[in-house]
Image: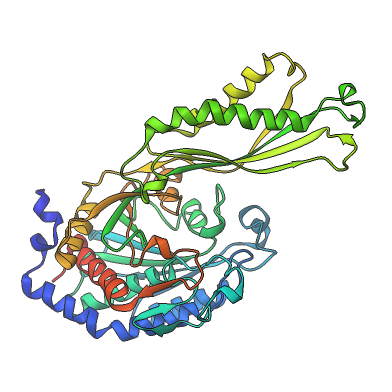
Length: 445
């Protein structure tokens, strides 16, 4: 099949494109109202508030639009492992399915967004109510407007724009709203649970679009990898006035931090990846973030724990990143003064770096849709953090490699006070890009 078959202009007529564009304007007020109603439900995670209510809102909306809706609740006995910060609160995901004219013989595209949001921080830092969904000067304010309830609203109404334009999708569309993306985890109660339990399957789904905000003109084809870990050093107690009788675990921890920083960081600089945004995140990194040791000032500590955040760019592997750390620890043991070095290594979270081919059909249709809508060549980027793309790409056998990230809004708005999205220039533009790409990928008549 030619590359033209994966472009908007190759699959849609100018009349159809114009009709979809107009439909996004006609539906913008409904999309905005839906987004405001999502923002007004406080789904702060941790701990994971009001998930059932938000899932119900999304499900009711999809049901009214003709989708078959399924709610997926994580069994309570799995919550301690999958949602350890959830304090026993319910974890409910929602999936809507809409069949195309070709039925099972048609392609299936799955659009996904998470509806949990990070804490607001200090309320006094917000000019506008964090759960108000208020619009001022063309921007909607509130936690989740960009990251990423805006993406959920846009993906839902992108399909409605296709239908309002008088077109019928040949292929099938699925919409999911999931929980707990913000608290990560090797497995989680959201997208991870759907993947692990057969709700997302490579033999049923041809492509996935995760509607995170990576800037409205970018197609995100990957994300950096991550290890969050802790190394606990063991020593021997002694009185502070006679430190030579003890083995100072804090000294070992600090020496390790210094040696790892000076040894590993120079190895990372040449691995800079120009696709990663923002530029400050292009170089893989090792940051030591927490140091805990000692119980009283006049005792040499026998335990010290140091936590680290290691970020990988595509091309690196978790195994390689771990080996760099193990090499430093082993070199310390061979150094005079560290003969009694004892330590335990533990990982709290990890995910491989991800990169998918930007010339896969799903990538091509989004790249072309961005150009049609904005007149700009689409950026092909790598996210600075990790996201739910990791589950279909790394946790499935076979994987769904045709998994991209595209959503309205800007990553710079994520997690800040007065988080916001521009209604016309981001939410609507993202909706139009999605609508054209969905119609091009699935076919429309």
